[in-house]
Image (tube, rainbow, N blue to C red; front, side):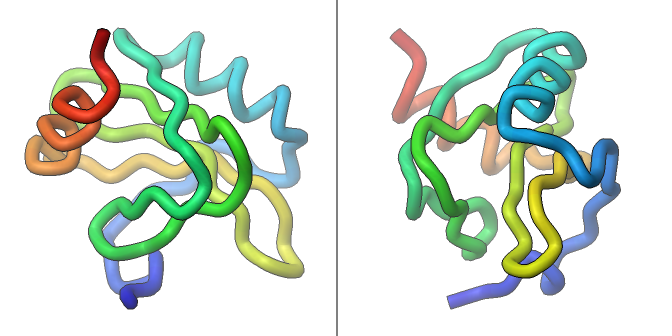
Length: 92
């Protein structure tokens, strides 16, 4: 299992509620999907239920929970591999 710290990412929002994270992802992406808890992005498992994951160009923007630190919105740039995976699994 991988850790989010093994990836290059940018923190876009911190100390937020789940609702604030979802609104941020929705407002700042072209496409948004809800993935289940345990879904992995570059090996790092996401925690929660119906986690918002958005696509903006070639960037992946998503809610992430860091234990003891709370809710964040993170961005991984040039994540075409993960974008294709999300679209294949969740696009209707």
